[in-house]
Length: 160
Image 1 (cartoon, rainbow, N blue to C red):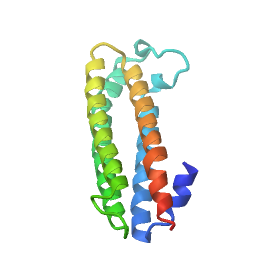
Image 2: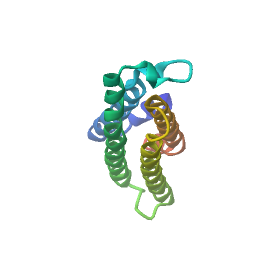
Image 3: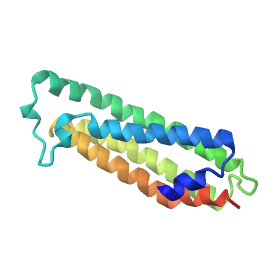
Image 4: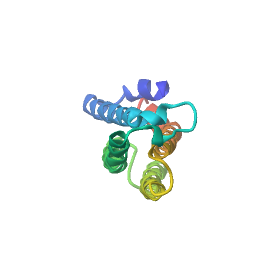
């Protein structure tokens, strides 16, 4: 991620501020998601039955907010990122790298929606801490892979 952080500084000041703000929001979201359920921080398999009813209800009640918020957060970020890409002198909607990057965004949004559906389905059969753990792990992997494959190379290209 350090290449990403350093390379992003080559953007215009306004674009830089927007992307940095959105990356901080995504990082905060992931941290909040990871820490949302006390049981999900245990080293062994979580057991929500050790929590009192109020704590279990709180964790379960917050889950839908996390699920839907990340969809809005990612969609806004991807829209902004694509607009910034199109401001580059050599980038058009027909530019192959732009099309691949935009397609990757669409695939992530599809995966996010499927992941939300999966989490709601799991809510009937798994404990809440397990759902938080799975959701956090899958989201972290998805965003890290996208950064490595697309964001870092694009942002590095802004240096030229």
